Amino acid sequence: MNRSRQRDAVLEYVEKTRIHPTAENVFLTVRKRMPRVSRGTVYRNLHQLTNAGMIREVKENGIVRFDGNHDTHAHLVCDSCDTIIDIPVPELRIKRDGFMVERVVLRGHCAHCQRR
Image 1 (cartoon, rainbow, N blue to C red):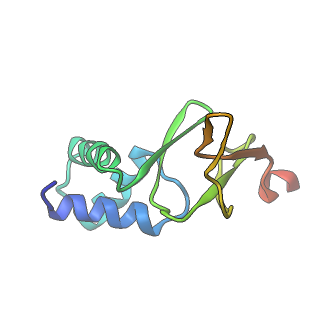
Image 2: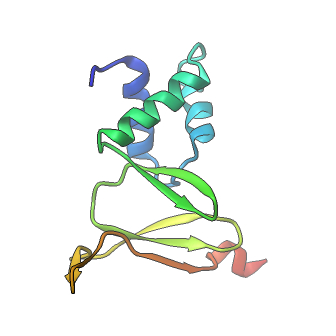
């Protein structure tokens, strides 16, 4: 895959943030640095980076988000506000009876939503 300033900006943002942004979040953030970047360019680059294995799609509650954390981890997902938080899980890849676990999702309510 060829490098471009736009692709580098998309990858840098997704890898640095821990909020698991939507494509629209990525577009709005990258556009602050590159006002002329188009929505289509950002979306296309997210798709290409996902296909190349450089970032991952996280689909929860019907929302597609992006994850640039390459460490082994699970996700804590808030059922109220859809916040996703990474939690380290050593030895996540477990094989048993031919079934391989590739991701773990724990659901509940984040601290902010519990206070409401």
